[in-house]
Length: 411
Image (cartoon, rainbow, N blue to C red; front, side):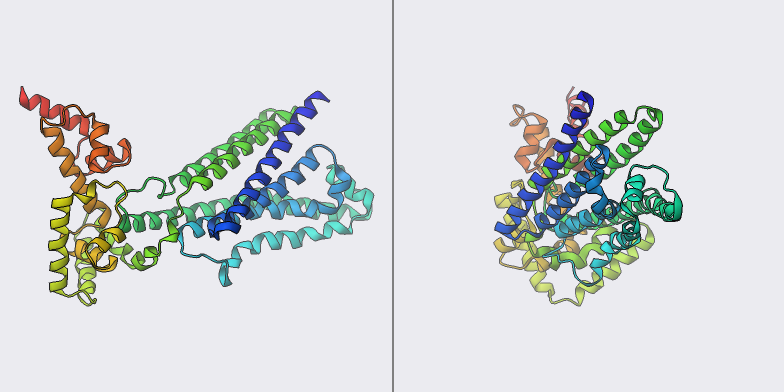
């Protein structure tokens, strides 16, 4: 009994954690109308409901399961669609689940409908089925049917669903990062890298859990414990990052800048002749826009002046919108001017200025008291890692290697 009580405690913690996060996010949404918080609350509520059912099943509360058992598989298959809604709300202005977006919940609803024949069982046969005992008599075929539905749902549909959403997240994350580079000079707490790590972690978790269950089949409690602890960690990871996530979609420049993504993608990759032709073609599209040559030149002159005199690029949180306001223009015209003149997006333009400043500081003698991390902060980078990435992209070597080469040249 002590062992079972311990397992029950962990299972209750899992349900309590999901309910706590759901309540917290629902409360935040109610106060602020931040739609991402609304969708992550739905996700957490589905988790709480599913793990209540799992808890009832694992610990023998079959009389209750008699009435709610068919909900388990649909709840499990609703996790990824609800989390996808959360992701879309983070990366889309005022995202709503309308029209074809409801399609993502079609699979959980279909699975629920296929599970409904469970209620044709008399009480005894229903208990036998939930207890995984043989169901004899006239209801044996119904038991085989429901067993097949469960196996297809868990091993087939859930697996295919995971692959489907993994690909959708991958594609949409790329697009999201393209948008970031058009609008911001930094990516920290904006690029949703934690979601990529989450999917990798979930994949490894389910594989390891299945392996653990296989090798401890005679003692399934060990596998169940690993599963509960793993889900505690996963849900805490999701809840924590959802709380601290910067909800970028509140800034409406995302919508205004979306149409530049294709050009940006080509500009930031190694160019072939075909890509060069594509860029020329896209730049020709700019020429048909409302931005006139004299206006563009004026924007560029003002931009060069303000960057030289005020060094605005050293502001670690400078954005395209803020810079456009300082230049008394709009973000669309400023982005177009930078793209046409410098053949780069806003993110790379600002970071190249930062790298140039950092190289001067590394070469000079007036900043020898600063560490490389200190120089990174001084020129506008929010972290040492982002500085190293940008520096190597610009120069082909790391700041440490650059400094070492300067030391060798001075000898």
